[in-house]
Length: 278
Image 1 (cartoon, rainbow, N blue to C red):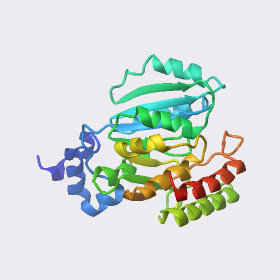
Image 2 (cartoon, rainbow, N blue to C red):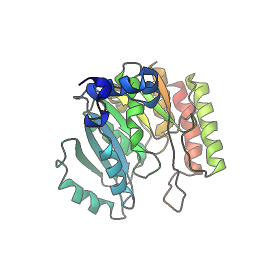
Image 3 (tube, rainbow, N blue to C red):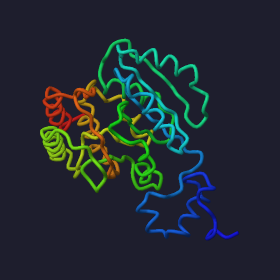
Image 4 (cartoon, one colour):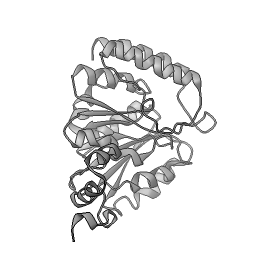
């Protein structure tokens, strides 16, 4: 049987055989546009998920993460949740090793310290070749992991940002002032970092593990100041940075959105502060 008559569905996604079959059918250019390529079978992805009062969405989010056909360790860092999330995590610990493709590792902060603090814990514990940040809500779609990993897997990038403001992927229409604030903070950050990012505040940041673990000891921000801080430190190290377009299903404050105007003011301070020095 030739590859031309093979059915790509018979192969595990992102293997050499799967990609060869699709390339025969679709061509190299189409495959690249669709994010079809070969991911080494021994590659391990660390998915770092900071968790704070996310009982309503956590299981649905984990199902989506597990459905991505890659070998993963899923690092959950509970940042002092008080809504029953900890009870849920205790149940998940009982089956942490049930799926070799999706091993769960769970860590706890006794007091709420903020997203940046939870991420530092997760980054330090990561064992994978590549590390990606995933929020515990349902605003970002884990099905887009393979596209985001591609520049790193193919040796083109050290860091990838998933941009909500590139391309034609679907976006929920929400707060204009949030949009304006995001664009302002990204522009201000670019002025100090000399990067041309379109979405500095995005959740989806992907790193080679050695890159983020080298930066971890210098990280200081406990809340949403993490975004401008890590961006400034990435830029200062002159790493290879790519942006990829992503979809976005934003949630309202009634649905649990946590960032507020005070975080915006702190982000401005962080852009200026870390724009000058680590």
